[in-house]
Length: 377
Image (cartoon, rainbow, N blue to C red):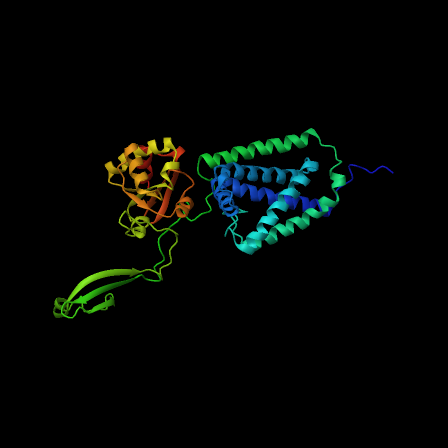
């Protein structure tokens, strides 16, 4: 007897198919919101595997993964072109399951970014998630004889192409501007002010002028108001212990002399502009040119503005001179800078420890726009 190629799909299988489609769509969308962040994850894995020669292709690989994942999700959700979608999704899951297994065992990359920054999973949780998806895919593998013989209609291709084109535009927009949804600490409107329930402690060190004895005191628990004692001891040093202060940002800013200016800059009670460029030699040329007017406006209005980078000092001097940027440079770790803003260069406006606004270099404001933002607050 001839098998019916259009055999009706069981309800339980339909539920599983839709679930897999939605998981893949969600996973691709949250990664597509932040394609640059996904490219950073790809770089991490390329370094782990020793494939450093492919680092220049990290963004292309990230885009390929994101868009492929979305197309497979759409195909499963609408039961479109299943004869292609099933083998493709099985191959993808086989690859990522193997990778996440070794990642769970060896902790190669602490955060695989399978759901971007929207949902954080440990490497072990990610591996278990992949195992569950593989189990859910088994019925489709066993029934591929049915799905593989289904006629593929034109409307199925149209569904995949139309959704794919729209999603590609969405990803492109997020790449050429900032993510439409920011899941990270430095998102607009977030207060970064430290929780001072655990007060910072200030220690001062004094040296006895006669004996050379050195003592450290927790302020104000030393006889600072005793004129006789003060005449016998001389101030040597001061240190601050802020280990009990809960900070809402993972960042350390240092000036050219190595002084820690993090709190002074991030929690500046006035307006604070921060130009962020992880590596100046990789910064967009047009973006650097646009910074000249921003720096000039800040200087004319007395706004505090700094350049925050992980570049070498020679590179900083060269770029500032080449683009005519008269702005003090400070240093931070490259990972922290990449987390602050997905743009090189990027611009952040803070006020009293709150992120007021962030700009991609394609959207840098002019003086009038900055004036309007500051005036309305």
